Amino acid sequence: MLDRSVPLEGALWDVERVHYLGERSMSESIRFDDKVVIVTGAGGGLGRAHALLFARHGARVVVNDLGGSAHGEGANASAADRVVAEIREAGGQAVANHDSVTEGDKIVQNALDAFGRVDIVVNNAGILRDKSFAKMEDADWELVYRVHVEGAYKVTHAAWPHLREQNYGRVIFTSSTSGIYGNFGQSNYGMAKLGLYGLTRTLALEGRKNNIFVNAIAPTGGTRMTEGLIPASVFELLKPELVSPLVVYLGSEQCQDTAGLYEVGGGWMGKVRWERSLGAGFDPRAGFTPEDVAAQWSAIGNFADAVHPADNVEALKEMMANLQRFGG
Image (cartoon, rainbow, N blue to C red):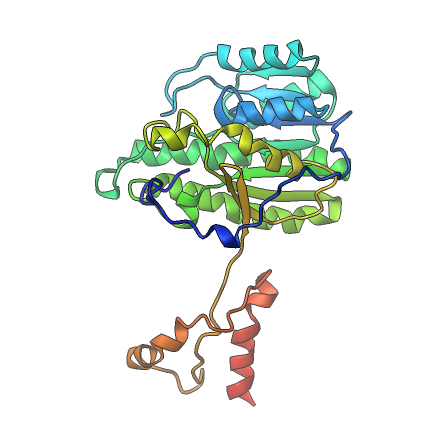
């Protein structure tokens, strides 16, 4: 989701630090022959682009879309049906699914009935209910949570035993810069989107032994969800098709990374990681006061020599060093 606080027109970009790909690489062709992918929210926008590109690379695709509005209202089967027709007209294999993502077991069963297996899950379905926190209503909060978080959980949880049994799987969650950095009027959306990255990290740990790799993207695309929020001249350059190559790569056997979070859009992509200061330590036996915290505030927030913990064990390193320092 686009951060509307960023000035897109007339902005100064540090272009010299960006790596550009001029000529196409001669890397191994990525194929999904005999693989089955579920793409939720695939009736338009990003999901449609993902589904079409997976199909173009040989995957059999379950095109899921309830067909509701960008605000989560109504239902219409035609959206998913149109994408399936596009795939079939191009010589690919696809079936439409019109269930809500909160009924993920039905979506996965549809894949099993149609194709006999499921290998890749792309959790893309989403809605917006933007309001400032002061004006937020319970219905706005709960519906965004249900579609983004509960929906992604339901679909992935239904697919998980099949991925484990076949000792292979790829799962992609759709996060957002609104969750990573925050965005005015999107407390519900930001909560849901960053929550999905917490799910990504945990499932990456649990799935690794079964060759199930789990990653997340934070895309910016010109879709019905962002139309009107982005200047028209920029909107035209933010084609959903410029996000899908990353998603297809993350869904492939060639991708051996897991637990990653990638911002992507407009032909650019980059990996995001946590960073933490070395912090300040106090004697746990003697205790410390709020005034002691205030006195060390600059050290607590000093990111010189910052660390990048990869897991909970690494995250405990500085705290354990502090205990050893004062514990003898």
